[in-house]
Amino acid sequence: MELHKSTSHALLEKLKNKEISSQDILKDLASRISKEDGKVKAYVRPSEKINPPELKGVPVLVKDNICTDGYNTECCSKILSGFKPPYDATVIKKIKDAGHSFLGLKANMDEFAFGSSTENSCFGPTHNPWDLNCVPGGSSGGSAAAVAADEAIWALGSDTGGSIRQPAAFCGVVGLKPTYGRVSRFGLIAFASSLDQIGPLTKDVRDCALLTNIISGYDANDSTSINTPVPDYTKALVNNAKGIKVGIPKEYFVEGLDPEVKKIIEEAINKLKNLGAQFKEVSLPHSEYAVPVYYIIATAEASSNLARFDGVQYGLRAKAEGLIEMYKKTRRLGFGDEAKRRILLGTFALSHGYYDAYYLRALKVRKLIKQDFDNVFKDFDCIITPTSPTPAFKIGEKVDDPLKMYLSDIYTISVNLAGIPAISIPCGLTKKGLPVGLQIMSKHFNEEMLFRLAYTYEQNTEWHKMKPKL
Ligand code: GLN
Image (spheres, rainbow, N blue to C red):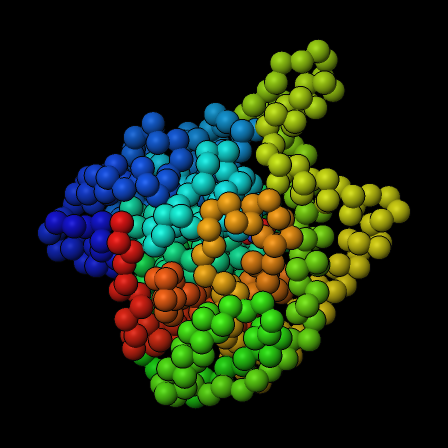
């Protein structure tokens, strides 16, 4: 039985009917991983064996920045090498409470989630299963590639500026960034605390709704989690787009958007039109400031969050004379180039004399970006855009040009700045056979609208059934 090819909801049905056991799923996944992961490299620390703490349900693959009790959690950074948290993140606890287990192996990512290609991992890059010479996107590239390559059934990633949705688009899977506050961040090793959110990467929209059901909800351990009821998101899976009002932001269809991606997105929009959704052009006038604002706020928060990694409490400790030398040497050896770049940028933006000019100003513009969305959502149920301006690019193509790399998030980061939810679903393949993702955004806590529209699109197209040839 090729269980690894299956969705979670199909496996859950088989488990319920006692046709298979969780052990069967695990065995099948293990052989798939040993067969394919030498090429894809979605998993880190491959010398560790698959070994869930307690096997039940359909095991979930988890990104290396989510704490798992007693299992290495290193954010793919040398500075956290050997770190085993003494507790589970709230999402892991919830997965266990819902009758599932964590896979026992972790997914590759850009170091501390800094990046859009998974090339900034201390373990080396993950390869895109659709074209092994291409990046899988990032920073949750390991989670996305594993799900696309059928090396995992479903997975968790984290999204600070696009890190779930962009790799989902590049790998042809479904990825959701929930509303800020919907999912507890307790046990997620922080990158930028006002932007980070954990979310699912799955093979179809139903699995995405199921995993969102499991991980959502208030948590007293996360002061930014919000105490509003969690609806059953599977109830939103209705094949009906009639009357849904969709805005198309004109600022997102300009220079820089790959013509092939543009064409595929336009076809998807036409499809949804035929299914009864109503489209109209809208404006998000402050969009052009999203990238600079994000790279001030995100690096400022990162520089502060990463101050705790100094060789004293976690992971790596360099041998040196005296405490200050030990701090310096540990951080010099432990952080990769991109982490250092962000710590420097963020520390500068927060420094005396520059704080008002950079950080404070960025916060003000962030507010304007949020207001742009609030205005559109007064009249529209959702907004549709491409997830990324290009399909997956070649490994090595942008890694030496940080500004180029930063621009690959141009369509995803406003969502984090505004705190709203957004989903990416597969909507086509380029001539070279690379997947393209459609992004749907909605107002705070309206994940149901995303699921409804995404499900309707999926039920009336075949893209989610396409598999890479490995
Ligand atoms: N690519 C963006 C960055 O480099 C977003 C990363 C993320 O969402 N974690 O910051």
